[in-house]
Length: 439
Image (cartoon, rainbow, N blue to C red; front, side, top):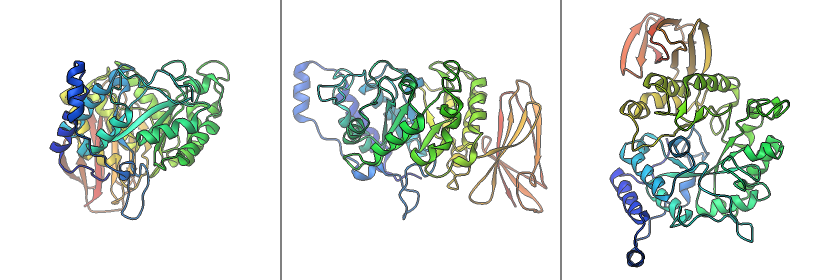
């Protein structure tokens, strides 16, 4: 688990409430009066950028990182007040204490402007207190903060919104501002015909050499499918399908397929597509480096059952769990799903083994994931729209011979016993997620 920076949620929420009040536009006279009396948010210190897996070992993303991202929630339209408000919700809804601790500024935080020295400049309207102030405030509330750029000169958000030719300069800026993670997209990278392995290796080197000596997680986002832009554009070796080959040595995660959708329009069929692509190279995943099938997308077009299946399968895949939804409006079913600590524990298992497909029959599939305590996580996945019976056995999932086995249904929070048979009638688009152990 990640170390707590602020032990009491009420204190963290109070800090963010103060910061949010400061972020609300006011008349000039009131701003001047408030500035004179403004308290300084307590910095979380140098430890805010470190994630520790054991007392003796410091490693970034020792388990798949978790948090909240702006993209599906707000597309490119958000501001300081938006981010502070969502961070406050993350805490008040109990998600921060359940491990969702990254607040990530995706595309839209910057409009591609630089000063005469090539340094990034940001809108004072969008970020009235500046980004260094934002990270200090979020760190003081016990959160980590991520930012976005592109490997090319342009980004997915428009002209100039990338770091090509400025890798070290931009990384130094991000580190000086206090960011803990960087997502590097590849819209501009593809436009400039960059080699993904070379570009991301160079960005990794820039992070390692940053002038603040700040640890920062690197999220590799080459989302391109082979020939997405036409014949040979890109070739297989430069697509998302091949990022697992170089990703573990330079990044903490890498996208394994294109986006699961766009804001407000995420379909279950595309979630299954990304799940299948992510499953292609389970051997590449492990502590500090993870296959990434894209964000969690509650309330973006899927039913409650379909989203629960996305979360179940992302947990089986040991994927990063980044919620991308407006937390002020998250549905009760979606909130209950992301709050489920038993599902999260499967994703966050310290063993770091990615689950794999064990068997298929029609629309029914059995997935299996070894856990560090010797038990197995088992997903009975129904890819079809009609109910179907899905079956396996304790022997098939790799458990030793025993007189009986405990079946823990982590969605229903119930436990039953079996002599070895594992089966369930699974509704359409749904998943029965179990934790199975010898009794």
